[in-house]
Image 1 (cartoon, rainbow, N blue to C red):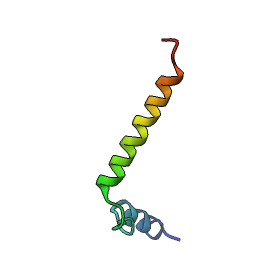
Image 2 (image 1 turned 180 degrees about the vertical axis):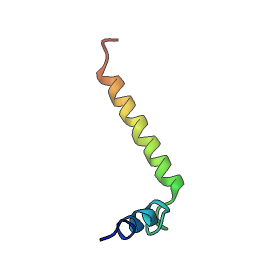
Image 3 (image 1 turned 60 degrees about the vertical axis):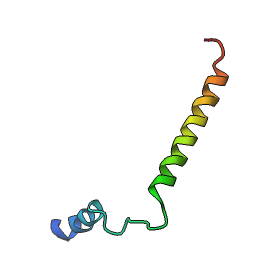
Length: 51
């Protein structure tokens, strides 16, 4: 197995080949992540009442 044959799939993966999900809307994913992180922040501050 040569270096080129081992590196070619990794280069293709790094360029985005095969990892494009049409069903995932970036706005929905980003908004969901923001909501989840804000919820975790709120939960953390509720448990840390000594400050």
